[in-house]
Figure 1 (cartoon, one colour):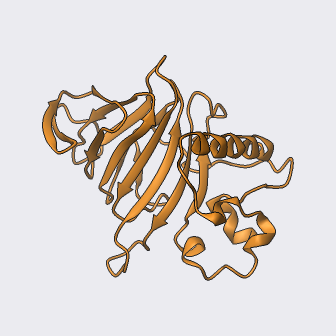
Figure 2 (figure 1 turned 120 degrees about the vertical axis):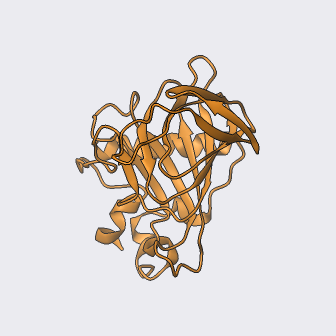
Length: 223
């Protein structure tokens, strides 16, 4: 991805969050120079902040995700903060590809806007799709979903995704872009994602212009 595209997407995201009355922390608006001297912060150590990806496909509009990690503990059994929270924007028909988490348990929440469509599979011991139905909790009420079945979350609804549960999601066509929340156990996007079709989690960046705001992957260089 070009840095100019990333800058434009973050600018658009800030406007959307504001339109949805979702307030980001003050450091979300810092530029690269503002981060000097903050390398020891929890924000940097635990990879909080701006994060986006096209999953290596080069077509963010079709397959991609922009998100902001608001809080996160440190991976490992001794974490003093065993939880994480993210806010995401999912556009109509924009796919977050099929994956599961080895460790993380998460609630995905439609915070407003359009409808969020999830397609679900269980997994077998080899990491393949299971042919067995799933029992999932939607707002605390259990329902059975057939392999590859869909759950559509309208604004205010949520679903619990447990370890090993394959999921892909996208905004329902014609319903508008979606403000999506995630509340989970500690998040580690470097080691905890198992994509059904192997692909990178983080983008390669063509630095065609300076960053306006840092991504979580930029901290090592700039901070």
